[in-house]
Image (cartoon, rainbow, N blue to C red; front, side, top):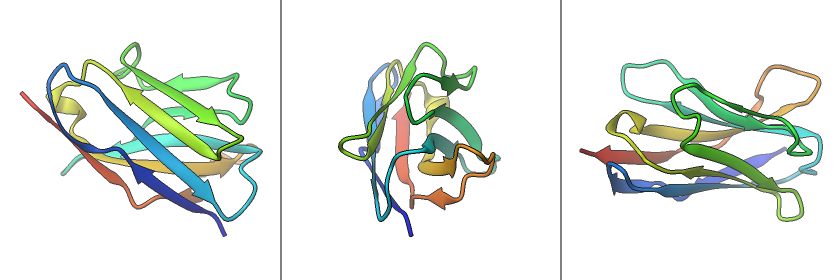
Length: 119
């Protein structure tokens, strides 16, 4: 079994920054594609960013491209999301998730961390 624990959420003013972290435990971290998702009240969950095991391929949603950066440290079994120039519309519960590189389905999920951006 794999456990994912997010941290780093909070309240920040528009234009500010936050760094989310996700600690992975339970099985080897290698081989997993890691992703960050978010869900705001009344909205569908959306994939914000993802990164392959090697870190060589990343994905960003158009709404965050140029402001958010995903990274991972395989030695420490962590994945991070640096969020800059935050906007009120970034307010959501942010989730860390993992999937096997051979599958499109994210099968392991964290409990989420709340990010609130005030205007």
